[in-house]
Image 1: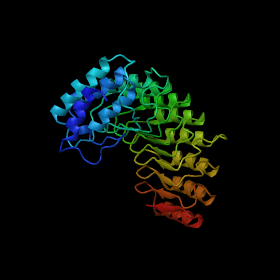
Image 2: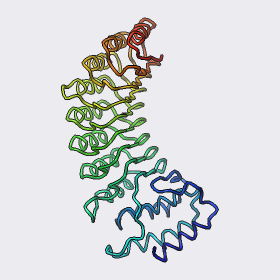
Image 3: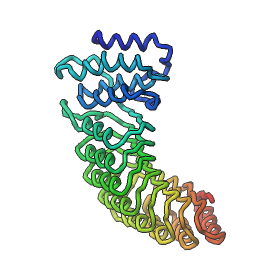
Image 4: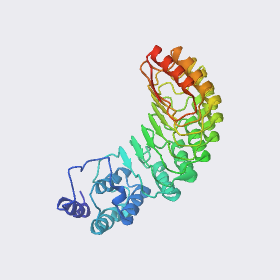
Length: 345
């Protein structure tokens, strides 16, 4: 370990703010870090001094509070020397980042652009964050510009090991969703198991783009897809249903699908139910479509699909706050009881 690194480790070792959560690969205190520390983190990534060195930044993020003293020690004693050092210099850190949490950090398009440049910059052929498994970016301001930058990095081979991508509450619209869908259609994020995009601004155009990608085999390993609290209507739901009904079968591994609090009505629900009746999403155990505009005809279609064995045995179906009357609800209850599914109004 270099002498400059030892200076900072001594600060940490004798700091009363260091707790037992000192461990590699996680950070839960990003919002408590001051701007110097955040800037240092991005500098470390962008300069790509064997990007695993970002781990030292993440360790600082586990402090209860990052004081300005520690931030200065970090920047001047570790990050600045590293970013100015020759690339052949021996690396004192050998850890690998597997979990990066930058939630609720006011991150916008420019910061994401910096991060994605680091993701695709490589001096060892792997690219930065090549071992990352979980990326948390929710409650930021990524928007379509940031989402397009992130999608472009993924299309260029970034994040090949990523299993969980959390992008809730980020002002992402159709353009950003379309960019991500296009990247996935071309092989991006091959290991992804969970994609969480709730509380954004994704509408029918974005979901149609996603459906097209899914129909081409994108996200074949995905087990959890969250799209609640967006602007998805019948057009988008019908496009998704068409992809699911293909003989190749989109989302074959999906277990949880969340579409609550959108604008899905009877037409979309009928198309979706027809796809389910053909065997789509046979392993699904959680279907959440509460808070939409589904009436009696949509409920009847879903009831018919369940009666024919749609979804996994014991699946939970959440339908509260739709437009169905008691007649439609009872038809769904009867079908669910008969086939061993559970329905919640």
